[in-house]
Length: 287
Image 1: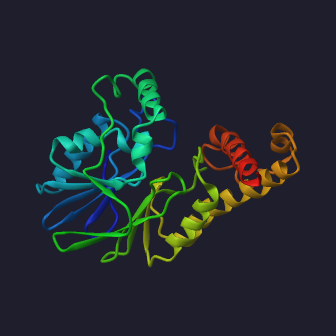
Image 2 (image 1 turned 180 degrees about the horizontal axis):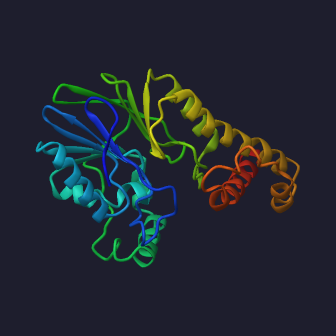
C-alpha cells in the first residue's frame, strides 16, 4: 500500500482489480485522504480493519496531524469494514442517512457473517459495522483547516446513500463507486436509471482529476465517466428490450453483443450478474 499523490494536498491508495479474498485482504477498492492545516480528512476506509490500520500508518508517514473525519461514499463492505480502525483514532464518521436502512438489515448482517468465513483472519468476530457520527440529508459543505469539501448526495444510484465529494480548491472529485475506471462496474441492486442521471451531475463539476472507487486516477473525467455511463445505458437498452418482449433472460443474454465491453477487467466475473439484475429491474419498471 503506497499512497499516490493526487494534488497539492490529496492522496489515494488503489485497490487491486479483483474480487475480495484472503490473499488480498479485501483490498479491492480505493481510499483517499486530504491533508489540511488542521488535520486529515479521509474518504472511505477500505475493506478490512487491518487495511485501514496500514493506511493510517501511511498517512502518519506524510503528516503527524490527527485524522479528523472519514467521509463514506457508500456502505459497501469493501469501503467500510475499515471504519472501526479510524474510529479508534478519534475520526468522526460522516455518511448519508440513507445508509441506515442497510446497516440495520439482514443483508448487512449476513454479508458480515459470510465475510468472517471467506475473508478470515482479516474479517473476524471483532470486525463490526460502524454507524456514522453525522448522518447527512442534503448538500453539505465541510471546512477543515480552511479547506472546503463539497459533499453532494447523488443517490439512489450505485447505492441509495451515494455521496460525491468535491475539493474545489484543487478541482479533485472523489466519486466513490459511481465511477469504475477501466473495468466493469459492479451493478448489484443499483438503480441504473438514477445512476446515469448521477453521472450527468458529476459531469457538471469542474473536476480536473477524479478519484474513482475502483481503478486508477482519471485525468479525463468525461471519457471515464462516459465508459460507466455507456455500459449502464447498454445494459438498460438490451435487457430492457428483452424484458419488454418477455424474452427469457438466458436467450437474451446469449444473443447480446458484448464485444464493446468484454475486454475490460472483471467482465467475465460481473457482466452476467449485472445483466440479470438489470433485466429484473427493467421487468419491475415495466410493471
